[in-house]
Length: 272
Length: 109
Image (tube, rainbow over all chains, first blue to last red; front, side):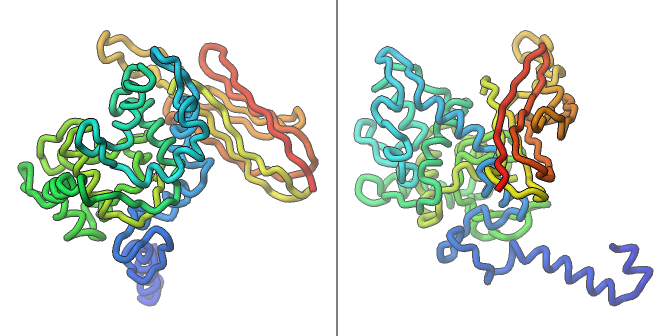
């Protein structure tokens, strides 16, 4: 295109530059109607990705995360542990029993007096009700089962409880979000609030909404949990990441889920 | 994800002369044979889908060879012009003489 416009005329140069502006509309134009993917000023990470990536997520067959969801569906029916029970023995048909469930986590757990996320809920069930070994946090089984459970709430608006018993944990998560950390001395908000929509090297910074997790990232070539994403972010700013399933990350997950209230569950979302 | 599961998506109905898109995906780890076991340091033997073939009413309509550079869970899609109703057979050949297959019917309206 460049060579052509140089040779032919300045008019082609003008045309070429309009084409580039046209390309960027998908990301930057506030007036674009994103439908369910935008609630007030909250925009899903979906709206920052290219049309090809979005198409891949939208097609149930082509979405690479669905392989994991299918595997989760198989695990749902497999009996394990000393009780000889499968998820399905208590919860029956996941499309009924797990509908809307994924949109309401993290939830308060009375036994441990703190909020737990879907991963931890699954492991609690495995240990207490099935008498089985808990899944390792970032293992294939755990990711696929979580993706399967959350996929039952596909399109359901995120709606998490933050008052009452949850309030102190919500405040801790919020504090974490605005707290500077690492050698780069940056807080989550510096990228995802102050610079949302701007470029970070070759990529667009999103608002850091977590409604699509576990997400299939091209970079990972598999599903990954939101805590893996947190760890990646923390490493990027040269901070020591917390452990998978740590209280710090669950509180942050709670706060971020609230930041994305009303956005639809997209699990398994496709991102780059 | 140890289990290999082939899946295909074929339109249920089409008209003669239509060009339809056939989509296939097989969950497979596509082990390249170049990676080493983290603990023992030994090479993990190659285990990939090495060939894919789609037959329609017994005749090959699409085939390809796959190599170690192709990522896990290979997705293959191809267009086909519909001439008659019939049955697809999709065959994936993997290392170690393993074969996976799946059938799908196509109706002509």
